Amino acid sequence: MSLTFPVPTPLSYFASLVQSDADFPLLEAAASLAQDEEPTLDVQQVLDDVARLLKRVTARVPEGADDLTRLAILSQVFFKDLGFGMNANNYYAPENSYISEVLRTRRGIPISMAVIWLELARALNLQAQGISFPGHFLVKVALEGGLVVLDPLTGESLGLDSLSERLSPYREPADQAAAPDLDEGETPLGLYLQACPPRDMLARMLRNLKEIFRSQEDWPRMLQVLDRLVVLLPEFWTERRDRGLVHAELGHVHEALQDLRLYLEAVPSGPDTVALRNRVSELSER
Image 1 (cartoon, one colour):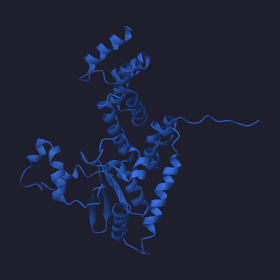
Image 2: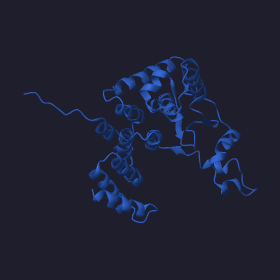
Image 3: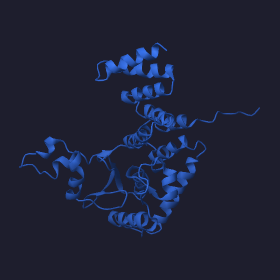
């Protein structure tokens, strides 16, 4: 008698990948996001495609090359030879967050480009990490001579002046009124250049998609994204609240009540408590 095993759903597969922060498989988990659009997508094929890119890079790296040389070769191959860059024609397309599409078109947004670039950089033994910079995801590499911060869309190295200029629209008023005896370029920036854990990178990708589908009022696709966010960040109650509201938009009364009640139980005195209790009462009357 042959044994048969159920085929995992895209969500259950994703859940299996993000259970632990130890050896978090960022590339595989990020590649799996596209299965909401294409359930039969072969994630292993995506990983193999990135492995082939790595071979193109390593073929150019001379034996005994130092970190700076490896970084320069990676930038040359990734941005110049392969032509990876920003999708300027359709920056807010959801496809820009799907690694399989980014690999096919070589166009994307900073966070999706960073996922691929970091995979290659770490395979070259570079001490590379993501930076959840406001408005534009960045990457950094620790070299013997110091820290290099790069734009993952272009490979451009960003100095303190450039970073400070990019940060300016997002600074708190208190930051802009820093005491004159403080190093204004260094101290505020340091708060924004911390390494971004892989789980947080994945959350940022999902929240980009969430915002796209929210603006389009595409509730079914937004629900798929929120299902993943609840799995990824089970203690972020706002994601469960938002999923409950989307369930309500779709007429899923039982699921909406379940999520909203859980949120109200966890956050009993939030700024939205009164409105949500009214929403729960309204849904209960159906």
